[in-house]
Image 1: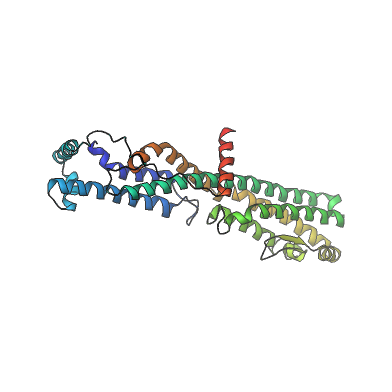
Image 2: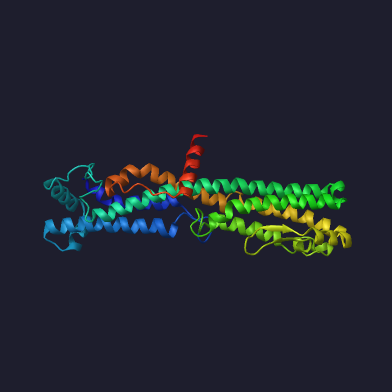
Length: 332
């Protein structure tokens, strides 16, 4: 092994940290910035430090710290390391693993193998999350168009003058909104594929808050869509439309009600647009996922050569389904 190989751990960890990049917000939108990258960097450094520290300390008769510290003593120290490694058969690149996929040259092959197992699992999970979040991004775009369509219909004088037409447009919006919630609500809950993913959680929350915004129509004496009978169940997060309440407000304050619906449609569409705009929550999270997926793919061979093959990733049904969708995305 070349003496430069001793430092592969540090460079590998640094590369992974760079690949992960910044988070899409100041908290948890990045891909495991505080978990995977930092943990991996520390574990890689610790693993290789223990391996070579023990090796060099034993062979040179020094304590554990002295052997590894000698690596930083200049070219003569590095030359000595080369000689020691050559004497015991470790000269040149190590390309072989044990029949069970372990790198037996490491101080703790099993810990390294488990670490590679974790990387294998995360690789699959990140790909599945990328697929699921890409679908959410497309669905947010559909919700933006739903808001725009509602505002456009209300701006049409014929629709604005017809109580039944207004009710029909609102009911159509409610149906589409509930389809959105039904598709993605479970993915952010415990055990869901996007659980703990801020980009997904914020998207659901922001569109829900947009529906409940009491300032839509304030200029016309209306306190938002709840005043018109459009409400969201706090437990299920599904929307419902109270037709009798809507008719009552249309009868008592038609201009204010129509203005409120128009404002709501425009503001809802704007909220959805911001969620998928460049450098915002969903695009940032997708960019981070893409970087770490590429990094693992590009360095899989070298990681396995150093730390063993690891066990194959274990996949739940939802992960397997999303992973299959991800593979289809690559071929499209």
